[in-house]
Image 1 (cartoon, rainbow, N blue to C red):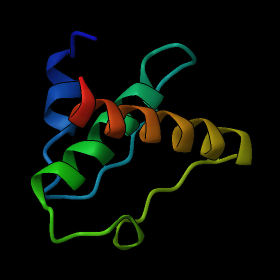
Image 2: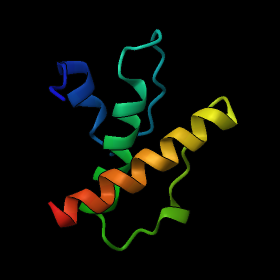
Image 3: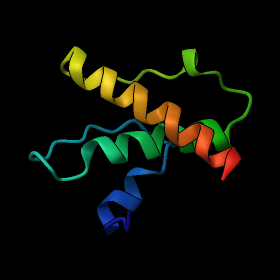
Length: 77
């Protein structure tokens, strides 16, 4: 996935962010990339140290599944 300039800026985890965008804009993909980026760049952090909020349980489950897949793929590709 090629990131836009705004999406690239959102990967900077030195500050908290709020992402608002329409359906199909890549919010979940960005969410997953940011989460995995934080874990990769800060190995001292554990997943339970990261607050990640979605609006629905369905979205949370989707993010959880994608994070697992993305994070595992970083080490086994």
